[in-house]
Image (tube, rainbow, N blue to C red):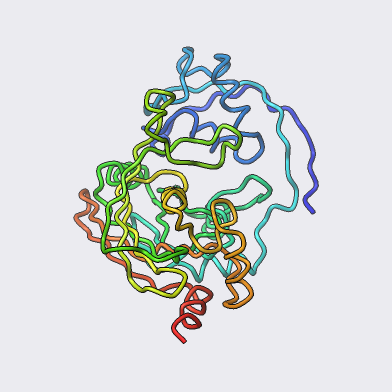
Length: 323
């Protein structure tokens, strides 16, 4: 168990470096303060105007410019002892690297490892990778995967690469695909699903599809996915999913709305069916794997094209279904 001690940080002034140029002030503060303060506190000090950029108040979305000076007010810091990654976890992340060059790192994220620390997990993939490569001047997540989702995830090794990847994700310039096992029988062939996703009022970390009668009541985020059946089984369907947008729990929410939830999904799924697959096929987690990615970084003209097989535990489930 990690021990925690408390101290109060003094006022600090940080000059924006090339590493932070173009970064949102909220993300800058989260990185500067690390996992020592909750996200809610970061947004509280921004909202109260305690954070200043060149002596002026800053909104969370404000982007920093090289050479600006950020005033960070005194905050209560919870220092966690013993947050170093074990040799086993370091080896696991090292083994997950499938491609690395001067711009990006692409990993095959194992299921069960969150992408960043928090919510009961002091260390995530990015924190472990920084411990693995302490000599790197810059390394940031380019996007996210759910903790129990396995497969391809991108890290950027420079601010230029991160901004380029964000622009590609926003414009649809990255072809990113998943394999998932959904409950029930998929009718027909390829289908494009479009709807708006909103947070549930009772649980902020859960999404749902906005209904027609709710138009104009709160803002939803447009979600678009292309679902293609790859294999049919008596009580489930293996689907390929191509994401055209990147919303929180997009695949899980859309399939749940279609009454074909992802097998093994403890939040949106069919709990009786999950127990059945755990007992008969040994499935102990969400059946969702990011298996394919294709994109070009324009500033380097390099194309990245990767296709990873299903994780071993998921392939074991498919093997049993095929029997």
